[in-house]
Image 1 (tube, rainbow over the protein chains, first blue to last red):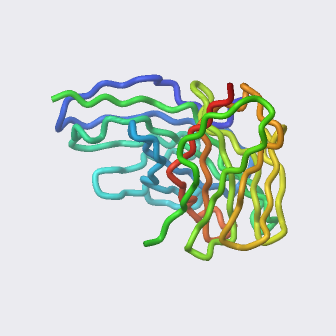
Image 2: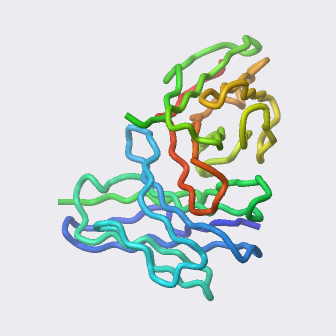
Length: 118
Length: 114
């Protein structure tokens, strides 16, 4: 079974509008971390935002916020006021593995390609 | 500048010719990892290392080897590359093992095996 599911292969948004990229996850661990990365056409992976499973507040980083709904196991990325430079692939990822055992894996979804139009 | 570097960035090789992709980080990170990225599959972990001389397999280790003789370096070795190893490879590092520790990625190495 997929650990991270991103159901939107592609999304379109107009400049200055907000967009939500969906991510659902599956884990039996009580402690886990959720991440979003951006991959522009140049190929590098850029860390955007992190949410811990015990964090009560939704994470925010500038124009990025994470809509974390633990009971639904979803961690959607919200980008406010989209800019042309936001056009990229976006990956949701989860770190899982029992704490302090030394095992640590980052599991990725298949990504969502976002296109921002003028 | 804190960074993860990979070399080479692009490589075209032929089946069976041994190659090494180097990875180095200057942040004194404990944890390092290798991923491959293929269309429609996202990123999948190949190997990881929790510290010097401590390495373990990820999800797709077949056909790869790694070593961690120094904290800063984590090379990926393909002893006998095959066309199915054509992919985009990323090295990543993080400070430690807490779930809060963000992994920082290198710029990627695009490998083509003919």
